[in-house]
Amino acid sequence: MVERRSPRRTPIPAAIALFLLGCVLSSGCAISSRENRRTLNALDEHATPSSAAARWVMAPVALPVSLLAVTGDMAIVHPLCSIDDAWADTVDALWTSHGETKFRRAVLLPLAALATPIVFTGDLIARSLFPLPKHEP
Amino acid sequence: MLALAILASGCAWSNPENRPVWNAFEEHLVPEDDVLFAVTLPLTLPGGFGAILIDSLFVHPVQVVDDAAGDARDVWNNMEWSEQYYTELATLPLRAVGTPLVFVGSFLGRSIFDAEPHKDAASSSDVAHQQEVRRVARRLDVQKWLESVAAGRSEHLRPQCEDCGSWSDELQFSFEATRRAADADGRLELYRAAERNRWPPWEADPGMGLRDPDPVVRYMVLQNRSAALSKRDPIPEDLQRELREDPSEMVRLLARKLFPAED
Image 1 (tube, rainbow over the protein chains, first blue to last red):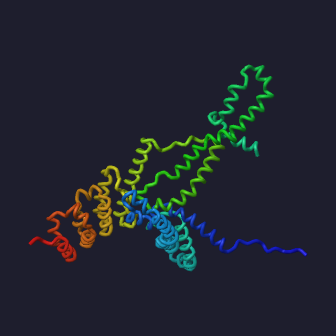
Image 2: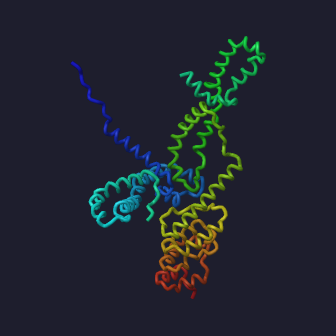
């Protein structure tokens, strides 16, 4: 009797971890731009010790703080700050007239409504991951 | 695999500096005379192949170890601890992980291909050049920030420019233009940045924010003025008098509290 083995599947936790690692590595591109490191920049500006000796003494505490800050920037701050640009891109792409006739706009209205969440989500994810320029009005 | 390795490493091998064993073999053991050359070919040919192998697999890789180490050391260059303390700390794990990767990658690449020797950026002229490049970059940052404030986008990163180098005429012009064109929020950011970085326009007139046309800006500047700053750059008597008699009640009250009139 032939024993059938079930096909090997990646365990769910490992798949999630790989996905998150991919997000982290990709979002490293967004974080490579100084403008997108708001928490780190605030810490650099307001909490940097003035002397080298103080910087050495504070390092054991400052290192985990900086790692938390960069993680917070990647996962929370930068995506939140990108919401307005993503929404502006969506409105510009789907709801702003680019010379179309009223009839054409009326016909495309349902499609624009359907596409809005998709375009917004995709734009937000892209802005969260990559260092894209801010939306220009 | 061996033939492929030899052929691939032929890229490095194409440079005479990367094949010392072959050079020595050719110089000392291969006869110049045509007859002797032909006669000794059965011996020199395998010897030559052996020399290629030794150069490609041992000697040249050993030659490039210090260059690969220099490339790996470059991962730790250009760290600005005084200005980006937390940012540099956050990059430490990446640099630690990247260092052996860069070393191995550089070592393999330099072993296989003919690459320029690593140059340490340790000479004083290199350091001075790098410092000047950083100063120019910071001046450009300040210029860009001033333009964004003038355009009403004061959310732009506030620049650190304690070492702008010389405050250029272009920056002075942009500063004055920004002060004229920015809205109240932008002007407040401008005064704060100028005070924090002690830019020349602020050094020339530390009370500029206290003479702003907007009373909220005057109030915020006055309120945020630290005791240490007031000792180092005291507000002139005439400006104190003006603030005590300011049209805005909030500014008047704060000024009278901070600079009580001598009876």
